Length: 419
Image (tube, rainbow, N blue to C red; front, side, top):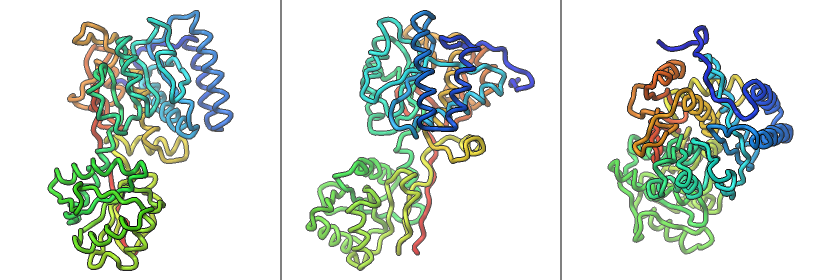
């Protein structure tokens, strides 16, 4: 039977170096001050981290270390707000949340430098957008498991090739889930013949090849007069823009896929050309390969545009987003969802002894069963305490978590109608 707030689960959380009561007070102060954001929140966090560091020399090491980036404050706040909401969910089941060993971490830092020899905890939460090679080395040397809260870029494709890739656990779906949603939506709208264009001088161009593979795999056709299916167009070279205009006029595709910044030189040049009829007889729709936050700011044009509305998330996203909105007064992003999932994973990972891996060592994430029936958090806690493997109702993904492989999720798109 699932546990509930009225019938609390017995407290067995592992406390941080300061002890459970002191940790609760310090962290409670920290969360309250996060409402003031930026400078005050950073001061409180620095104080907390300093206290943890001083206590660590005298107390046993925690079972979990959470490395918090020293990068943009907005991203850090988003993750911590989600983490706080996850801790609240744990409390609602009658369990005192785990207080991890918080450690600041620079983007170009070496995680091994944070831990003296033999002191790496069994579970390490990497910073978002982590250097996977550095954390693979950490896992290989220490046999620790590494949780990757927000890892979505091309580095995910190399997970299996890393020496310790089987000890690295992504929490959110890859960007390919977003591109797949765009490809499927385009085909449903009858846009079966596409021209794919990218600006080779920008980061957005990395998405084009992945989209082409997915679109063709679903039965679509990518047109090109170049040797490659993705046409690189440097906006600083007029001859390339002229050649693209000729190709579009001749091929007359249903839509043009654009992997470029919406306010960049290439997009501006193509908008002007399409308005002036330079692609006649083609007047293609546009498909944008952009993150959802950038796509949300796209203005309407004389032609329809397809863009991402929400990146791939799990089936329990709507309920989470509602709670987050009520608590913090804004819409959550994937980083907030990653923080929420992290808090729940840490609670379940320390609720009972870790299962033994195939290598004969303890695996703090071995309780996750990606193929099991999904369970609410309180019920999952009861099953986990009984030694069963479980799968949670997923927020950041479908919670089909596996080592060395990104989980799945569902993205949504939106059509910007022609004005």
